[in-house]
Amino acid sequence: MRLKRVLAIVLAAGMACASLTACGSKTAESSAADTSGATTAADTTKADDKKEGSGEKKVLSVTTWDYDSSPQFQAVVDAYMKENPNVEIKVIDTSADEYNNSLGISLSAAQPDPDIIWVKDMGSMLQMADKKQLLPLDDFMKKDSFDTSVYNGAAEQLQYNGVTYGLPYRSDWYVLYYNKDLFDAAGVAYPSNDMTWDEYNELAAKMTSGEGSSKVYGGHNHTWQALVTNWAVQDGKHTVVDKDYSFLKPWYESALSLQDNGYIQDYSTLKTANIHYSSVFKNQQCAMMPMGTWFISTMIQSRASDETSFNWGIARIPHPADTETGYTVGALTPLGISAYTDEPDLSWDFVKFATSKEAANILAEQGVFTGIQTEESLKTIASAQFFPEGESNIEALSYTHYSFDRPLDPQIEEIRKVLDEVHEMIMIKQYTVDQGIEELNKRVAEIKGW
Image (cartoon, rainbow, N blue to C red; front, side, top):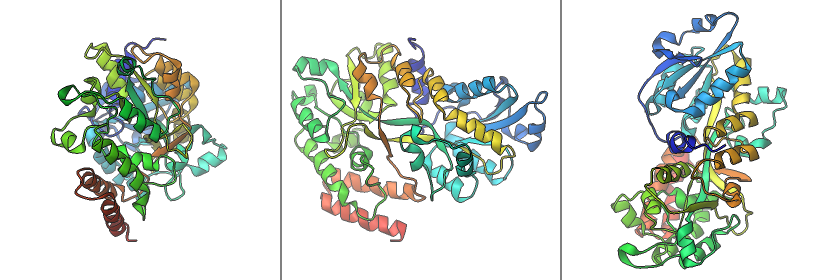
């Protein structure tokens, strides 16, 4: 199947957000079986609705954002109802930028709607768990002998205080993008799917050429602190919430070395000029760039619209020297159940289905990367028009271990702000690496009360 429409349109709307951005502006609830008859959430989120299904149908309510423009939700809802004709699913649809606030208000009323919650970000999941607004899933999982190994460690990382409040639904993770035409012109072999970060640095040096406005950089680091700290937590031995941040030292030294040698653009220039990573890669100003899977859609759109014409590819993200290939870093969209649901068993049945291999293959047809990667789903996504040709590009989408860029910590947003501030000071050399680590240790300890 050649998905000519899917990854040019759907991925841009669904994956580029990567569970962090917002689109759309409406708030409504509707039956997934008849989205044309949408009414306001205030009119329809009543416990009585569950008794008003047609015939003997049971009714489940799910809360999502930007439902009409998000096939990653629609596809699995429609598939579940097709397999379960005795169930009607009502969708409480809210714009992405209003979603967490609207959901918080709804849950504070402790009403049975919604039954099922798509969690937009980890911070909100922790808040809901702390307020006991999410139903623990462990008893359901134990009863069904539920196998979490299909998520390659992601399900375990979603546990909070040893309790499972959600299962992986959608997923985005880091890969390495590269410009095939630049490599061909230089007569250099493409990046492999088993490359260490030291080898990446050597390749970046080899692929750097030119001067001034015509210079091509071997690599590119966007200004996010994640483009340094991610590789320090890639092996799963540390997280960005720690008592001692000395484990970051070699990674900052590596980033500064690349910058000082001119193999990547310097942080100050990128920050001051507000240069977006997509323009750097699209304008062929760099040969390689670590970035999330959501950027695949951007490049496919770019080729489809003739904005770009060069050939590009992807490889697995490079790995530390003492770590095997296949380790990556990313973020998840979990799916959970409201603690106030009056349909706990049916809600669990939906969650099981929506996070299953079957659903993964269904969602792959919509260009959606899920919490489970199967050979079938990866090949479906890779069959899209303008996706890079070659088996190595399909292999690049697979991973063996998945670490969160941000751990499940109730104070992660405060800590992230500190990480961002110290990252900037290190990269503009207002702090030495050692001074930055000392500052992180001090300020995070104050936040955590250590």
